[in-house]
Image (cartoon, rainbow, N blue to C red; front, side):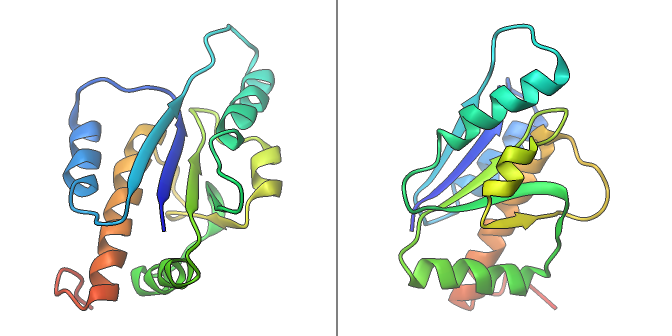
Length: 151
């Protein structure tokens, strides 16, 4: 199982990046962050549509597409671990898609195999990278029986 986090926008040094890197280096599955950015000045709806094209282009054939969206299904960490473990056991690659400041276009939501939420609050897209990576690390620990996760 290979994991891709494809996300709109690029970041510089800062605490959000540090959080991502802190957990990314602990994940044993191959993990790649792919940042996309549209350089043209577009109106919000056109920008979301263009970001959707660029994000979906990051998905390898046969990969599970997980769209991160505030309206998506929320799971406990153990349920997320079970889902990730199932994909691992099926030898499926997984692509997590994170939209920009205006969120994901409906084209991504419709194409996704699963729409995942990190709660009903709105989170900055740069912070979502770190939060998702921590949950992937937590899932890895749960699946391995490591005591990182406590209930």
